[in-house]
Length: 249
Image 1 (cartoon, one colour):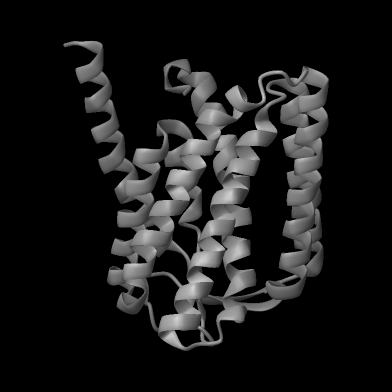
Image 2 (tube, helix red, strand yellow):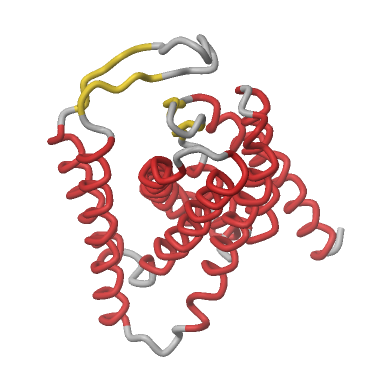
């Protein structure tokens, strides 16, 4: 088998696996948002993982199709067309930027990369703390498609301190990775942020122009998805790439 054939086979296999993983991750944990008829989910974790490991094409297909299937399974069919486009574009951008970043900034020294990555870590930590404090603290209703998509599986109290602690942990983790193993790690994070911004803006336009709902209410929800997604996905990607160096782009 030639290298080209093997690479195509690997890409197709990864596309199928991650399309399923995106769908499963999306439906496994949701929080309904009445004002927009949408929902918070953790699908971004697998969208970003697919894009960072296998590039823009796998990220686009797995992100768009996997997330759209989740909308259909959960009954949010009115979001499916937008999800196919928005999540597909999100995965493509994350994969493309993560591939091109080191080439674009190849003249940066290790010290400059470490400073940049540490600054990105502080930004992510602040996002986690502020968004969590404002929108996800207090009583939260959790839904699971395994149990019921209509009634909450459980209701929990999420203290403000949880989000502040998570924000500090995220900032420390990203900075630690920069100083211990990979100074350029910040660009991987910023790739997820740019892809996430496109996702946030895309859903805002769709809700505002086509659904006629209070689209502003969804912005912090989607920012939360983006932030949790990159916090979970980026360390997973680093571990996988260190274990399987052949997956490095």
